[in-house]
Image (tube, rainbow, N blue to C red; front, side):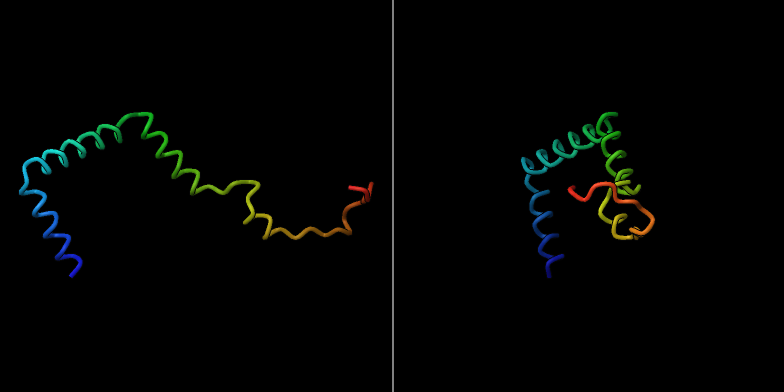
Length: 78
């Protein structure tokens, strides 16, 4: 039902010449913005940062177990 409604809306929009022209212009501008080198590098950096783990993240600290018997406490005030 929802897919059919979306099809009808898109079909009606494509029949209207002004809406169709606006959609084409918006699509062209989006493609031009996407293929710029600065945009591509930002997108690649975003996905690269999602993939690699961050050294000081909360996830790593949960996995670590610190044995306090291995350390000498120098000052208890802090």
